[in-house]
Image (cartoon, rainbow, N blue to C red; front, side, top):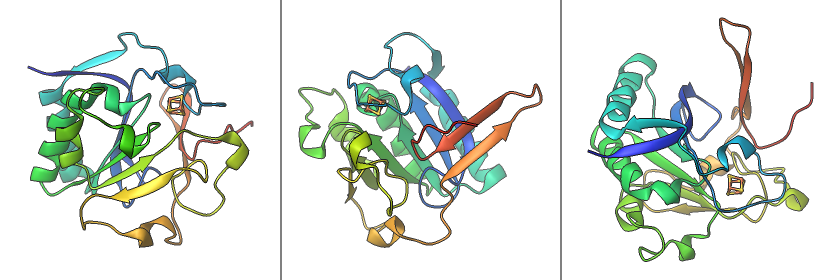
Length: 193
Ligand code: SF4
């Protein structure tokens, strides 16, 4: 039985990759990018610990209920939980969904000796966006990336560079739940209201 330690899940979002997707933020990151967009997910501590099997069922239900096109893995740092995520990614692709991965490491650094399970995870990822977030070089043009140094890598032919500049892409979503609590996801800008 495999487990994942998550910071958050959004079942259906249009702001975290092409189409409508389930976004999964893992808890814990060893990087310390300046103005990290998700400081709550940095600490390595138990947060929302969930069985991978349970998460698979949730993703499958999201495909049926929301017509999601894929899943997006973010953090925190997903490659620190590559083993559990590889099972989820494999399942997602097996039911026709695409898999997008955001990592603060560069693709060349993703070595099995450093990140157990990374080879299997990358075998089941369609597109990787890599590199640390650099506040001094905020991206103004491409979709979904926070800074200009970050690169898209297409590991399968499911997507190509056209997704980076497609018009009409949603950049931020804001939600208000039944208790009046506000949450946001999308581009990693700090928005003051
Ligand atoms: S890799 Fe992501 S979560 Fe980690 S410090 Fe950088 S922006 Fe924050």
